[in-house]
Image (cartoon, rainbow, N blue to C red; front, top):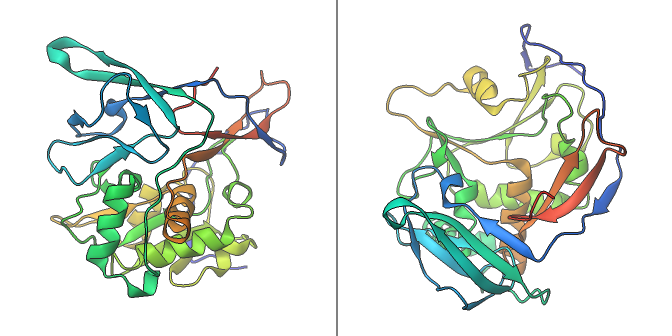
Amino acid sequence: MSADILLRKGLSIPLKGEATKDLKTSNTSDNFILYPDDFHGIVPKMLIKEGEKIAIGQPVFFSKANPEMQFVSPVSGTLSKIVRGAKRRILEIQLKSDGKEKAVKHKIPAIKNLSDTDVKSYLLASGCWPFIKQRPYDVIANPNSTPKGIFISGFNSAPLAADVAFVLEHQEEDFQNGINVLATLAPKVHLSVAADDNSFLSKVAGVEIHRIKGIHPAGNVGVQMHHIDPINAGETAWVVSPEDVAVIGRLFTTGVFDPQRTIAVVGPVVTKPSYYKTRIGAAIA
């Protein structure tokens, strides 16, 4: 199949330890941590105190600059500890899971009945808005602006990177719903796939699909943006990862924030490189 964009420069890095297409569920600990520093440019303001009970999707802190922007818990249980540094700066928010999976549920109307303002309100309140990054600078997107477009890279060319189509297996409907949601926020949604892609990603509706041929960094969304629709002075574009698109789509069908993540544990020192189902904030150990 022909490519829309052909990249001639790059580097193929041969590394051993690629993950087999075998999905396992990891044995996570009861302890989870949120790091406010992971969200660039955000000054956190706490909503709950140490020892208080929490549920999945319950707001833990918000952005001082934009109080509507909520950051939520990936587990149900208790906020066990707030670790502070100099000048009482929040470094860590430690959560203790109770294993009960109690979750906050939002009542969200059908997507076709929602305006862009409604969509932004639900994304901000549910904790899904931080999944949307703004270029330049890769900061959380400004909800008071409209980007020139939203860009999603449907493949990853980095060595030993997770296979996007495999990660999204059985989430095809959620991904399409996520695309429908994002389409209300920008004039165009761009989805890049590999030139030889035959997965469901090449058949998604409501997006401009771009087939890209080349070696790493062909899967880098910044490289794709440069070739598809470069950012000029004064313009912004938004970027969303494929798995986060599915999470957003699931929110608007179930009303529940889904903290699940699929990761690839890979490399030459890994005995059995595989994919694992885990969740946001889980200890790597």
